Image (cartoon, rainbow, N blue to C red; front, side, top):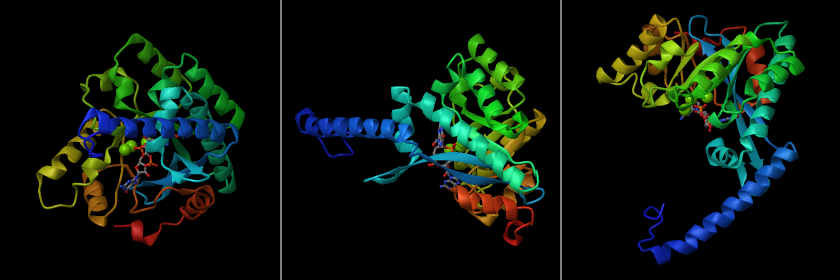
Length: 288
Ligand code: C2E
Ligand code: MG
Ligand code: MG
Ligand code: MG
């Protein structure tokens, strides 16, 4: 970002660019080492059923505790993992660890079902053997397929090719759930919703942000997405709930599930396990 960095001409920009390249290469090497040494971690954000106010599952969100840079967020290293192809082994590790953890927590809660959502990059999805990888992880961890949800952005579904459709059908055949992440932010036509076997719409945080405000136009889009999901027989999950007003508006609209700081930030495994066990009792502050 030459402008943002204040660089006006090409010559003044170049040294910064080289610095950026060196830093990027360092990060790339560090990430490769972190992956090999099992230094990545998963945090988990609860998904709350808006009918019962119970924690019914989690979204696994990868974290990188870097030895000198501190905790690095996925938005700062997933792109590197994608560009280098590291996302394929990284994504497999995330899937494996999330499933293993879900099985463990569910067992600790006397078999109470736990839905685990895992984010999948286009680059992973495009691997010809991706469905086999998922099947292998389910078998290795003993995770029941119907408790796993794979989250993909609209960009995966935007390329309306036979290969994409076949991949989705193979994944669905395993018995798992498919969700569209950040729904409403892509520029795709809605036609793919009929063609592709998708189960869940995750309403992007940018829509939820506008709820509970004074302008009626701000609720119209969210309401429309919830209705769209309902009419297509899909579940709706709202992302990024931070305030009670947003929760109330979503309940009113009949949105099924929600995630957000209002309930809990993504938390380390130990804390998430506690949340799930306690989630059998309705936390009073979640109820309307
Ligand atoms: P996402 O899948 O849409 O995940 C939701 C993001 O919103 C998470 O950021 C979460 O911490 C944040 N969030 C949740 N509730 C709130 C809220 O109430 N307010 C605000 N302001 N933010 C909230 P995070 O963990 O930094 O992850 C960012 C993105 O990185 C994810 O977006 C996902 O696209 C990607 N990502 C994370 N883990 C993985 C992974 O294992 N594999 C892949 N391929 N991508 C991942
Ligand atoms: Mg997600
Ligand atoms: Mg999302
Ligand atoms: Mg998002």
